[in-house]
Amino acid sequence: MMIEGGSRSRSHGIKKQILKQQAHLLGIPIQFYSASWNDYERVFLNALEHMKQLGVSMGVFGDIKTADDPDWSSHRIWADRMCAKANIVAFEPLRLFLLGSFS
Image (cartoon, rainbow, N blue to C red):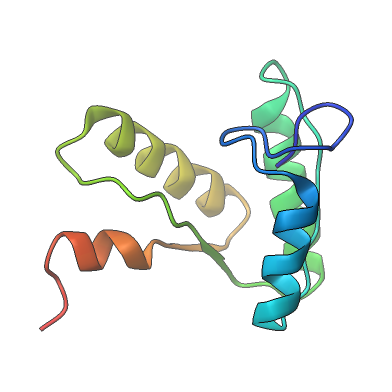
C-alpha cells in the first residue's frame, strides 16, 4: 500500500524502488496500490480481492511488534478482519517468533 502517487509505502515511507528490489531478490511478484488514509481500507480490501483473483490465498504481515503493544494488537485485529472479508488467511510469522511460539 503506497501513498497517493505511489512513490513510498503508506505506513512506513519506504521508497517504491526498495520494495521492488526486495521482491526481485526474493523472486516474488509485487503489486502496488495507492491510497490516502481516508480510502485506505477500501483500497486495501479491493487489493486483497484482486490478489485472490490472481490465486493468492494468504496475506503475510511482518510488523515487528509484540502482542502487548496496543497498536500492534489493533493492527493485527484489523489485518485479520480484512483478510477474512477477502477469504484470505492472515499470517504473521514475526509474531510467532516474538511470542516464542516456535518450539
